[in-house]
Image (cartoon, rainbow, N blue to C red; front, top):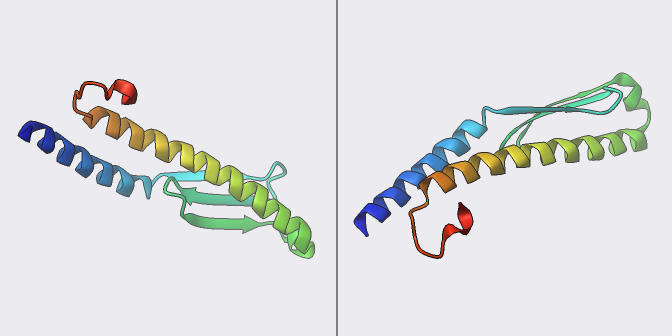
Length: 103
């Protein structure tokens, strides 16, 4: 039982380290015509937004671009985030009977 607790604490530490590392993993996304570019971390923190001057002339179009491009970027970042954290959690799961659904 003590070995299992030690392994769980070690896994928790690795998860925290992975979360910190994901702050340095950058995800870039752009609109199809490259008029809007967004960079965010794998922890879904926006780092930069570049907007073509042409989009500044049409508020409604800019809002549409922001929604579409941000959603695509967040989806990509979420996939990276979940895959990385799942890999760490899976690696640290003790062999508990009936808990093999995580493997």
